[in-house]
Length: 290
Image 1: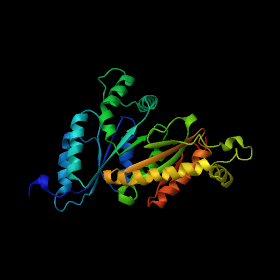
Image 2: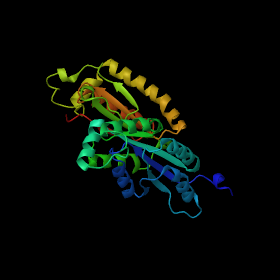
Image 3: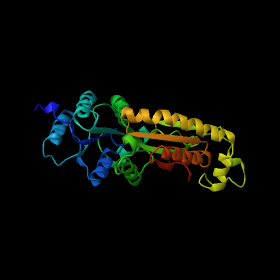
Image 4: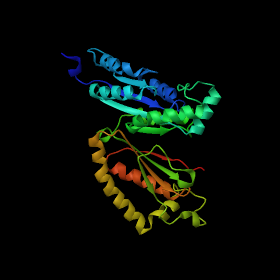
């Protein structure tokens, strides 16, 4: 039988992104989870790896490929072939701010792979621009700038350690505070600042949205219920469409001013809406302790 017509087989994760953003650390986590990891793989060899996995009797079924940015066009072509050959392909894209990447390179004294492209900031900018098309194909983008090694491990484990639910779509909900900056690695951002703010109620100010009194305060207003009803209708439309499209991850971020009260309550409520539709969302509160 022609190799190209052989049945699809194998699950692949392609780890890519900016140098210094944590590709090797992410690969180490997947290796600990039992994935077969190939680091620094030339894009030209993607087809070869896929073909080896598809060979009759192959014991390798979960493969993580760590790929850099030197030839994005060849990498994009290889990724397209991989999607044709494998049962499932997910792209994990890691990034961080220029400031964070410069600090990491200076701390480790590593050489940037674009070493012939001027100063370090210039090299990072060129790599970021080169990777932009690949970032657009990513199933999930993780900003590692505020994550230490242990937090990155937790994030990767949350994405890949457990079986997916409903249609293969993994969901997550997070709360955040606008004054601490927008989260970069989310799909939908919803602003809760139109709701009355518990911060201005003296007895509620010291508590967070996890406290029953704060939750009851936020939920008692008619606009809160109307917002959740309309959001539930939106989810009714979006979730099946995302599943049909083959989307692997959906992260919804709820924002308020400081990330302590309204966004926390609303994130928990949105998680309940997702559970009612058969999903098991991961819930996090980015700024609750700031």
